[in-house]
Image (cartoon, rainbow, N blue to C red; front, side, top):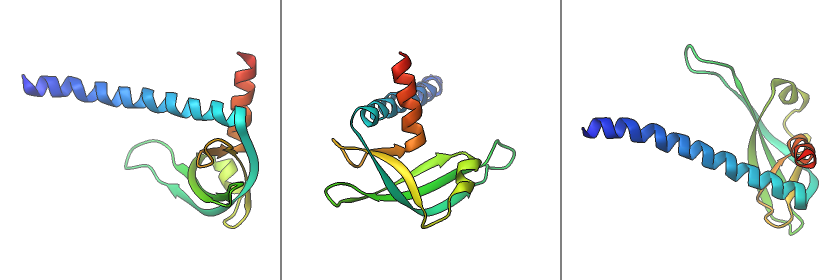
Length: 122
């Protein structure tokens, strides 16, 4: 009986976490659209995460660092397409938007522009 309950509970928790994450990131994107500050970050590192044996596609990750208007430095990792990954090298400027209300929240400029378009349609 306990194993059945655990077997049902684990998927519910995972799905709940995924839904919560999507809502959380969506609220962050809305904040970036409403009170975002455009700036140039610097690419600290890039890496390709290869899939585990027998599974899907590679993940392309870029780690960027930026300084907000209060001279605080923040760092974030973003998952991107292979095309965008190939456009930039370590040490190069990278366009981002950060929140003027909570500067630790940021996203790639192209993501914020897409969110801006989506919010303007609705």
